[in-house]
Image (cartoon, rainbow, N blue to C red; front, side):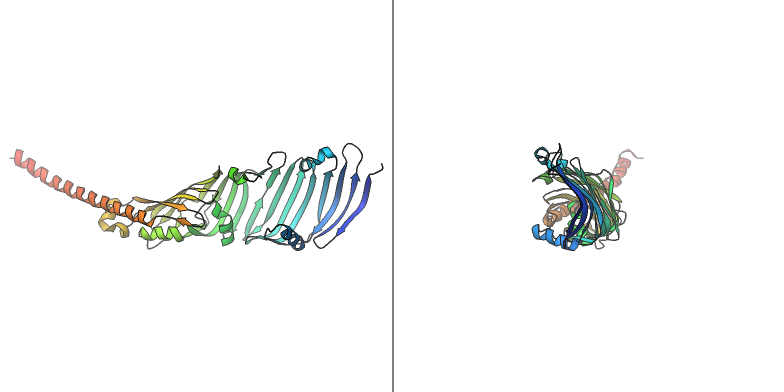
Length: 363
């Protein structure tokens, strides 16, 4: 029919993209459309340079591999109004390397399938000698579009911790990652649920639940936490994870996690609280008292007692009141002194009363 074009060769040769396909340009009928089926070979280094020139995303990538693709784009006025719902697109992109904010992924594959208003993606690659898998799904039939991830997806498997991963991602979940301590070792992460409205204030409505396997993680206290341990009298600040896992949930702009229990000098320390999506911290560090803080007698009386230290500020600049901690310590010392006095009086009463009774009623 006049106006319809069916072609067997549709080639594009450029630095960012090489494409060979056949297709159809149909203007007649109930569903006019433009469609292509073929192979594309993106040169990611060149393509990313173009993208970064348009949008300063700070992405770096290399790779050049031929993959199949298909495209269906509606042309009728009715369907074009909902182009993202009626658009169909499928392809695979491979990258030898991909880097963003110091996080480097190698042998990365991205499978994308867009149909019926839903874009399903599966991203896989090697990260820090471990495995990364992330399957975001964008539903354009909802207003605003909703980004979700498959429930129970193992996102990180046996991934070695480094500064970029800690500071760029994990720090947003809990302050033991970069704010209060330097973590080292291997981590595993499972995403039990995740949803994010793609709107201007979507982060305020983000909802997620994540499970972190910490069995391969060790912590070195830094900054505020190191200072708290110093005031509390810990010469040896070696921490070992008592809990081998942690669950965190993000709801209504707050990220709260199960308390983190760890061992320091044969005592249990607990870090609990929540953080705002704006970076604000509202945490409590419960640190056991020490002999060095209370002295021998005071420690004998108050062994097992903990100092509860509020940690505020932000992820990038956590703060605590050293003065309040010193006052709490002084209060414990007074408590220990009072307890010691009571014990002495009780001992004296225990000695005097039997003698007094013997004097009154004895033979």
